[in-house]
Length: 184
Image (cartoon, rainbow, N blue to C red; front, top):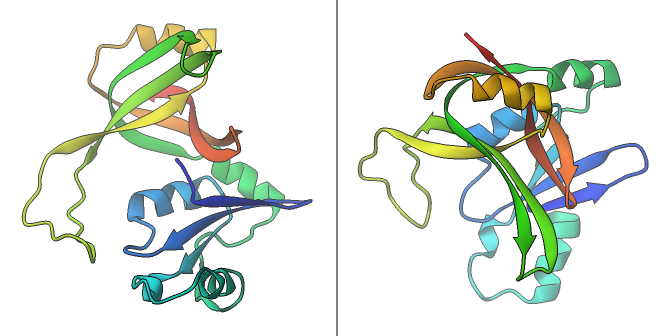
């Protein structure tokens, strides 16, 4: 999961979403709440026109735009319990890969699990959904644990399972990471 910004504090971090054409969707809201992530949404929907200066927009972001707390601040014990939240999912498969990127001149790893989720029937100010159905694939990061890899390698896909999802910072972004998979 990628946030628009992350504020780093001495005691805690805060995920920040900027609302322009649509608010935080239910999938992202559920992940934030289930994983104890502190997040606010700053509403800049009134700034869609080009009539505002950079300084006016900056002032709105910092001072005057409406803000909505997505995840209430909770005691540390409650946050730990939320991070261990187990979620039911339809898993289509997984892939663990590594290599060298010539473009970035560095080694890389790509550890993903692919989840089927119902297509959201959600319109926005920019487009209208006339009809939809079926599933889309959500890619989540998965930990590179030999025990977990051995476990999921023995599965036949697709399957229904319970995922244990925790939150981790990767390249300055707060993302959900699958740490365990158990058949239902």
